[in-house]
Length: 368
Image 1: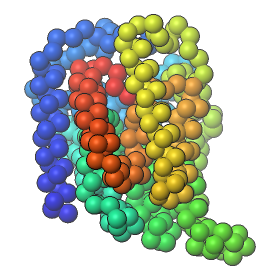
Image 2 (image 1 turned 90 degrees about the horizontal axis):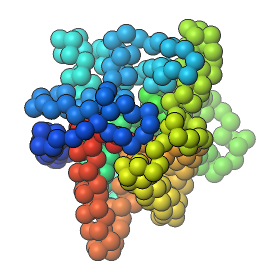
Image 3 (image 1 turned 90 degrees about the vertical axis):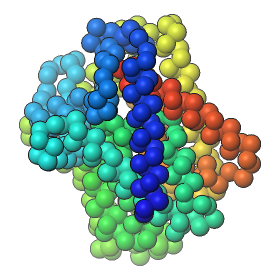
Image 4 (image 1 turned 45 degrees about the horizontal axis):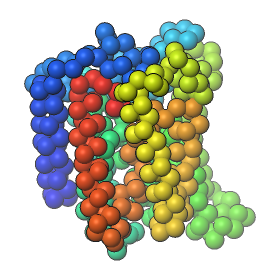
């Protein structure tokens, strides 16, 4: 525990100091990668304040929910109802201890849950993958290209912890706690509901997939997992009179199959770069999923494949790096690589991309 805390502290100092230097050293104009980005609104804001470094892009939607609650702006307008409630609720609670500083509250929450994520990643590796040095997956997680989001005012670290805890307790055959953490996962982001599939797999595995024997009261906690998503949609219905409003607003956010000129500047150099990086991450995760099925556990692979399928079904590759950041089996499979040249190659590539994404994020450029 102490060693993990020291690793995290060192990482926080390094990436945030790098972020501050990258923000204050460069003189950049607004991002123009996508048509929906208005350079007049998304511009570089130089500051030496390490707190404000962590609130960009989606952060302000979570902060808006924490401060003002959910609101629906109308047809084809961006609304905050596509952002799940657990993280902004925690920001609201913690803001009382930060004297109303919502950004500081969000950052502290992310750091705390990042630490808990590292602890549970260590526990899963040590207890269920004893052939792997349990610190190696932690290392690969912290150098992943999108890892800066884990200490930003985003849901990544919260969701990573909850999904790790869900898996940990399902692997320990403690399905009540797996259900509880799964419920919280599905209250933190839409892909949390997908944890039902791997937990169900692990549950059925206990009964050697004999369905008749498995259908007993012990299966009931598993249904807590989709309850989070369902309750969020019920809230939409009760407040906005539309159970499926989430999907409508998601489409207006650009999560649909449409590469028209109003949305995507494909022929700009920045957009082409974004597309190439996103395509790289898709190829990377599909390769990793293959080896996860082959070398690790089927439940891991089911979870990862379903998450990637949901991400790709949205009709855009935007944020694919963040979607796969929280898929923790990636880091276990990377730690199992025997070829030192291959392992070192990935480390170099990953650190370089991490530096790139930190520079993009802190300067208010689209980073995922």
